Length: 293
Image (cartoon, rainbow, N blue to C red; front, side, top):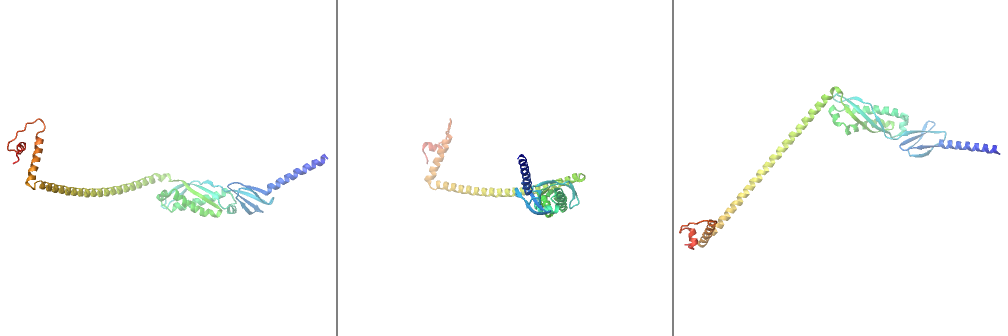
């Protein structure tokens, strides 16, 4: 009886192990940012990229994992020649990823080192073509976004056939050989100084033009104001003369006006501690004596 139980237990263990092997052979897991190719007799029959548990035919199908992440590859420094035959040193990095896993497997057997060898050659050619189409000054001015777009676009066109997408190919350092670096810097400084002097001269000319126009407007406004003031003064004088003439247009008005003027003069002369000596025939004496004849 114990012998039968031992055999039964052994059989159960074997069955469980076989079941575990069968399950393990018939399933595979796809992780985040990953492709998994399924091969049957060496031929790719499926490519899975949805994360989770997947099934395959046990003992017949095999799987291969391919990273779908963006990968950083630092390309070694290289010399390139500009359009005006000047040497420059470029130090570039590349961000790349597998965009089409089937092409990637068929062309490069999904080997990253082979992919990066091909990327290095492609990016170098794209960099060389971009820089060789520009003068040294143009390259320096285009460094950054413009040069990155040119290199990335051309490298992408070349690498598309390998199922690879170049996310960005950027020159992180663009330098000059030591033997002509200082001469180039001095020439660039001189050119920038000339440009600055040109801008300064243009600014001074515009400022003088504005100043001249302002002075002209001020002169016109001042002349008009002086003219208007003269007109107002003349009108005031005319009004004054008209008022004065009306004050003397009759004998009574003339006498009254003279009387008022005399009083004002007398009032002004009597301020303070003063002694006033008058001729009896003077106008002021006549006012004091009430004699207006």
